[in-house]
Amino acid sequence: MWSRRRGLLRPLGCGVEELRCRRREREAALRKARREQQLVSKRLLRDEATEEAEGGCVVVILGEAEIQEFLRLAQRGIEEKERERALVSLRRGLQHPETQQIFIRLEGSIRTLVGLLTSNQALLQLEAARCLHELSHSEQSAVAEACLPATSYLLTYLSSHSSDFIELCLYTLGNLIVESEAVRRQLLPQGIVPALAACIQSPRLTVLEALGYALSQLLQAKEAPEKIIPSVLGSTLPQHILQLLQPGPKLNLGVAVEFAWCLHYIICSQVNNALLITQGALTTLGLLLLDLAAAVQRTKNAGLELLVCPVVRCLSNLLTEAAAETVGGAVHLRDERVVAGLFILLQFFLQEQPSLLPEGLWLLNNLTANSPSFCTSLISLDLIEPLLHLLSVSNVVSVLVLTVLCNVAEKGPAYCQHLWPGLLLPTLLDTLALSDTEVVGQSLELLQLLFLYRPGAAQAFLQQSGLQALQRHEEVAQLQDRVHALQQTALHG
Image (cartoon, rainbow, N blue to C red; front, side, top):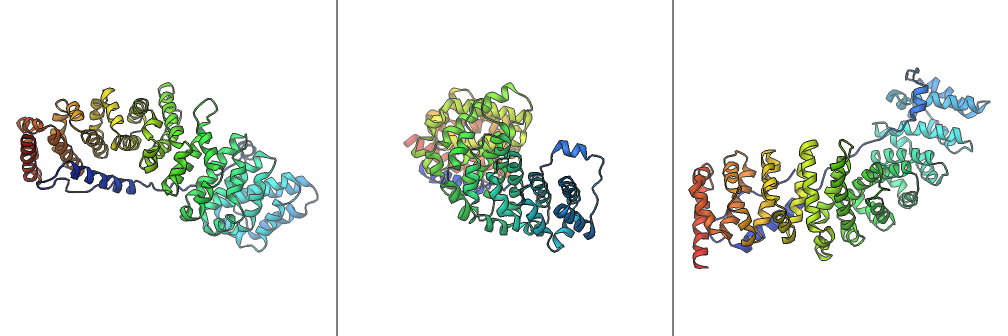
């Protein structure tokens, strides 16, 4: 997940500024590597009551003749109920991939379905939209592209008075958007971004959740940074997204999860994160982090990790922006409260979701990288020891813990005196005995910083069997030279 530079030790002449320069270069490389893989998926929206009522029906593959007959009845049936039943039967058939392939190959089938979608009878419109929704869920891109003639109408119906219909249109559009670049090319000039911006003002939570899904699919497109995200940032969507992420009694978990991922994709694009920061993203996310930390202490297994993950990622990536320092990121995040809240979440991850521990530690790394105040908070809240306890979790976690400790040590002698002596000495002896080169390399860098600012630490380390631990590594000669050089610097500095 993280790429790290090898050969952390250098020959003689490695001073404070060079150490800082090297760390800045590595941080830049880490930030670049941290752009997450996209979470492309599709959603299937089915009415539970309807599914239960139809529970006795088995999904069967429909042939051409059956499809044509259902379409004929849906178009020309004598009674509306008869027409609706025909569409229901067609919809059930379209749940089978083979029926979908037969349907799109049948001449005029999509045109007929679009005609029913645009009819003036609400029940027929809804069933036609459900048929399109089944098609949109197909794993075959050809099926999605066959639905192209319907997309402009689905977009138009986002201004419908029926919230159920809007929700269905949004999920269908979200499924089609992620599957086909042709669909996106058609929808962008037709105004999908303004249409979504209008939808976000809906008071219905189901509509907002569906909107968050559709928008997240749009933002994950490969062309999003150039063709989509600038339009999104130029709309009212970012302000509304931040409002929906405001902690408080009105915060809805399902809605917040969808829009937190939307914000994550926007931030990862790096199109204009300075704008998000000026709109208050750091403050909103910081407050939401504190709210989530309080919530995990009150509630067990409530799915909160689904929201914690994108929120932590958003904060981590925003903190790497120059604009975050310009506006005083530390002030916006209220130092000690954020560090305390983050440690509550780390404990929650450790117990409930260990796979998320690296996410929290990555945020802690970005908080402490350039901020003495956050490093001070770690020390004043006595969190160094709990941090050291995480070293036993995994090698990935160990590297991040050691990186955070390097951030603290880099701040100078006053900070190093809180790290050494103490539990750090036996801990580093243990990490140097590991076979993982990244863990060992980060341990050696931490030692360099400690020896630089606490010359007495070198002698204490070597007396505590540190030499035997170091001799297992090829870099021992360099480190011995380094220790000697740093001791000489300390004596004559």
